[in-house]
Image (cartoon, rainbow, N blue to C red):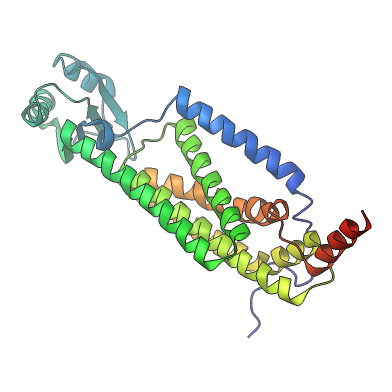
Length: 311
């Protein structure tokens, strides 16, 4: 049986030449992402900010958002966000943290139910107190830092130092741009978003490791060509695998985004962005960055030694 081949076997795309465009582009996007994070900020969910989230469904057709807002405005609960999502009957209500501890947060649920009455079905209620949200922030931060150091150690033992640094630069590039994505879109950043960022890190590192393995293999095979030529050969050799992996993962994520519901929407949105940016960074950041880290073929090494001796 003939295998499906999306990329011709003799493809010779000049990946290394494109670095003159992709490096400045990535630098600009990274700076913009950091600036947006510091100025605009992210839309933190109740996991991190604390508060109450209630998901309701109207029993009599499309939900009347205006009427709900008017009823809840009289409760004096501070910042109350009412958002329609999915079908026109479904509404998400978020209430800010109330002073008075966990008991005050629980009282919010009672007040909202009294205000909305039996006109709606209460599909989901989540209450996160200030102490719990603080612990979630600490836990998420510690988990992310441990994961990053774990990846650094893994790369350090698996590759020479140039490859380890190149992979870490590409991974940090993906994390920064993903944070910028949350700042631009204002998609809710919650505990599932932390899971998405860690998953993106794993996907990006895996993609980079596959390409680096092929580069090391090529370094042993081709000794009389330039470093740029060798990296282009390695990239083209892994292009088919990269397209298959990226496209199938994207199909799964898009399906989950469309039909998975509001609970995992921030996760799948981040993953869709992460798969695209992770594939991009593996090809256009991690691989060409090796040129600047001193990875050389035998031909380049000989030329450098000859130039040094001549000088």
